Image (cartoon, rainbow, N blue to C red):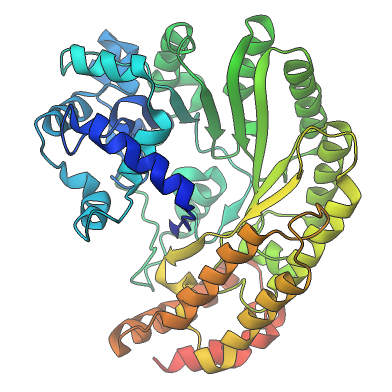
Length: 465
C-alpha cells in the first residue's frame, strides 16, 4: 500500500527548516539524521528501514546475535550512513533526491526531518563519531508481529495473520497484475519463538534511555503479548519523557479496550510517560467500511471508541486511507466525526481537539486508486464532500472542522482532478478492479454490487477491459 501524505508547511515551518540546512551541511549536503535516529522495525519478518521511502531490508540474524542494536544499526544501514557522510546519495532515498533536484525552494522529507530531529547532542555525536558507531535512535516504530483479526483489502499478508491465512488457504490473487499477495518470498516468525523479538527485549534496557517517541504498530498490537509486556514495563520502570503511540484497528474484543484504558490512565495520570496517542483507521462508514476492512464490526468498533473517549481524557486520530471505495460515501464519516466532536469534546480536557483525522490518499494497489473512476461522474461526489467540510468550518469551534482539515482534503480533490492516466494504465487498473473484487467476493462471502450500488455501472464496465 502506498499513501501520499499531504505536507502543509507554513511559511514559519519553511523558515525553520531552512535554518538547519547550513548546519546539516557541516557534515555533508546529503546528510539525513533519520538514517541515524529514526527506525521502523518489523520483528515479524525481521526487516527495518529508517523512513517509509526506502524499502525495508533484511536484518541479518548473525548481526543481532552479536549486538541486538543491529535491529536498527544493520551493516547495510551503516554503509548508507557512510555514503551520506561522504556526500553520496543512497539509491533507496531517491524520493528525497528527486524532490531536491527540483530546486532549493523545494522542501524534501530529509530537510524537514533534519529540522525536527536535530539537537546539538545528537548532531555532535554523529559528527565526532566513527561512521560504524551504533546509535540508539530517538524515534522507533515497532511491529511485534503480523497477528491481526482484520484483512483490509489493500493491506498485505506480511502485516495480517488473517490475510496470510486466506492466501495460504486460497492462494494468491493470480487473476490480477497488481497486489497478488504472494507469500512464498518471505517468512513470518511466531511472536513466542521469534529471535528478533528476543533481540528487542535484550536491546530495550539500553535503547529506552534515548527514546522520545515509541510507536507500536501491527498487525494488531492489542492482540500481541509483547505490547502488554511493554506497557507493564513502563508501569514498573517509568519514562517520564516518552511519548507512546499505538496504531490499533479498534475492532478487538471490548475487554482488551477496557484493559488498555486502565493501563493508559495509570501511565499518563501517574506521570510515568509524557503523553499517549491512539491512531485508528476508518475510510468511510457503515457496511461499506466493513467491506473494505474485512473483520470490522461497526457496532463493536463504535462501542470501543466510546469506552476509550469516555474513560480517558486523551485524543484519538483517524487515519482515513482515501481510496476508490471512499469516494461516494465519505460524507457519512464526516457526519460521524462532527457527532463525535460534540459528544466527546468538553471543557475539562487538556487537548483542544480530541477527535482528529487525516486524509492521505492511496496510490497503490492500482485497483484501489480513485483515479480509475470517470471524473465527470464521480468528481461531483468529491466537491460535495469538500463543500460539506466548508459549510461546517470554524477554526475556533472544536465541534466543527478546521482550516487545515479543509486544506488537506482540498488537495485530495485536486489530486483526483489533475491525475490523468494513460489509456493503458486505465485498462490495466479497470481489469484488475473487476477481477480483484469478483474474487474478493467469492473468497470472503461479500457482495460488491449490493454494498456499493452507486459503483455498479462502473464495476460491470470494468469487465469489458
